[in-house]
Length: 260
Image (cartoon, rainbow, N blue to C red; front, side, top):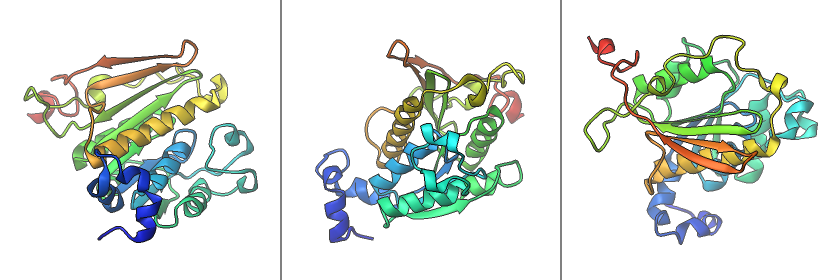
């Protein structure tokens, strides 16, 4: 599968990058990426993946567009209020880059459908807004041996990391899982929802774009990604910090006890 003349023109700024070039753009074209959530993080993420020329993008979301979404969920628009988010996002992607194929999954991810859905794609990006889904997706990606880029946002802060726990690191130890970083979800009610706490709209744009960058980097294979590193963003102080975390042999997913 080669690039057409139209694709060569469309992706010209990628093609002149030594780290991407023709081979990297071909990898993007051949890639299948699953995006969990077409909301605040998913909106910019989907736009940049489509603009970059990812061949197939799967979208999982069972929600509809509401007027209060539009302050941050920029892939949707006012006429789209009331539509399924996967349909609204699919139309927006078609307008941006008709060469990208979108696979819409208007469903709520659960233990019965997550394994097969995750296994059907090469890499997964989780932009969900609840801990239950994050743990479900990370576990499914571990069992399917799929890389996962996962992020979370608060009112003015965010975090982002990449997980490849089915591989070993340079030191020969297993890469960490999501459960190495967060062994257990916080007790119900301790973390306020977006509706309760609010969220700075532009923050989701920053983090969603950074998720797209990590996905593109993972597909093409350049640079030093966020495996074993948690990026923390504080927009009140406009500060970025990176914390290292490692494999925990006591984690319940890939720990020593789980393998007995």
